[in-house]
Image (cartoon, rainbow, N blue to C red):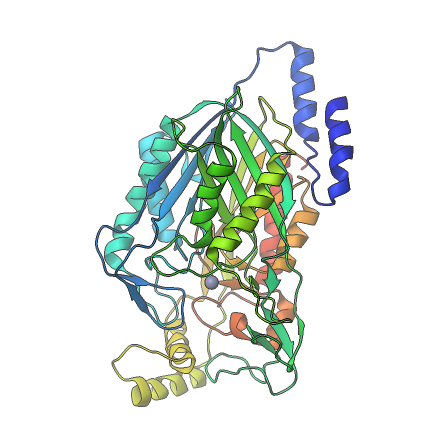
Amino acid sequence: MQDHLTRRAFLGTTATAAVAPWATTRLEAAEAVAGEPKKSFRAGAFAIDITPRELPVIVNGGVAERTADQVVDPLHARCLVLDDGATQLAIVAVDSCLIPRVLLDDAKQQAASATGMAAERMLISATHTHSAPSVIACLGSDCDERYAAWLPGRIAEGIRLAQENLAPARVGWAVGEDRKNVFCRRFRMKPSTALTNPFSGTRDDLAQMNPGYENANAIEPLGPVDPAVTVLSIQSPAGRPIALLANYSTHYAGSPALSADYFGVFCKRMAQRLGAEGSDPPFMAMLTNGTSGDANCCDFRHARRPFDYLSVAEDVSLAAWEACKQIDYHDWTPLGMQERRLTLAVRKPVAKEVARAKQYLATEVQQRKPRTWTEVYARETVLLSQMAPTRELKLQAIRIGGLGIAAMPCEVYGVTGLRIRRGSPLKPTLNISLANGCEGYLPPPEQFPLGGYTTWRARSSCLEVEAEPKIAAAVLDLLEQVAGTT
Ligand SMILES: [Zn+2]
């Protein structure tokens, strides 16, 4: 106990670096007193290659559809299985922009059959690389059906192989920081200067995403960002690196397709930094996307700085590595996981808006694919009118000793992520976006009157205005449950 307190006091000098594994310490102490046999903690990791076998493929993530016919770097589903003797769970990060719940539910069912693990004990998220095959139609892009049919089986196989690698392990966690690569991309603009969109469901927009560098009409960024680089490190009892789960909240860096973007380079760099290349079974790092719905690598308040996906990976891996040096490892720590479904209303267009969009599409777009913002959002208006009035979301919370993980199927803003981290009984807590589905952007209610891209009504931004506080409250409740404080 004294050890932990001393270390915590020492780490307290780096603001966000509180380790605070109080619950673990208390449990371990209780166990020692009771004289029970020592519990075993096990971990297994496997990064399965999910690079498409056939090219070209459709790539989503942009306004208009793209295709890719080359592989710049391979794509993976990075699978981690943890087991504390009572609970077994899987955490997976897939090199994909957005993955719909139906695909992930399929992957979980297949993995459950192969492993005996419950589907409710699996968290699968998309890294949000914008350079991967499309597995869901989004804005101007269609789904690459052939790849989407192949992917669930690969993810399930990755989880099975991670489970097969289960071996005694010790775990620890810490929080580093990288302020160089995360900035709010959403700005308050001078009146009448923000981009508008006639089919967005907004009027007189005062907010704009990516206003351009040193734009005199851009008044201020509209939200805080989360610069934390949170790490969960897993080693063999002798200290050999097995896996590392990291989390950072910038959108993506940008890479030519097909590529895992900086998420993939980060994993390679961590293996190098930890001296874990060539180990058997292979060391696996994974970088999950935090709350980056309104954040990216561009500081628009100043002139453009040089950066690319390689430099971002270098910076974030350095921050993760520095955090690793502070870790206090636990030979055993308790696991907890809870899942909840939440039904939310969808922002639907009214009949007049739908009629106007249909008329526009009939005269301007006809049978071809939409290309411009206006064309895309006219089509989105029609598509949304045909969709169900509600959506069911899957929310999860995980506890790994004193570390909390909140998982949400949305592109969450920084302010929401910071609020969840502050309110969570588990310190630290990290947030994983685009987990267990993709239900679109999640602007806080006060952002809607300002308009701007992430509020524009589309399949990728259609949850009710009150969705953000409802999701945050549900996730905090789940964190309380896994922490055992309720
Ligand atoms: Zn994006």
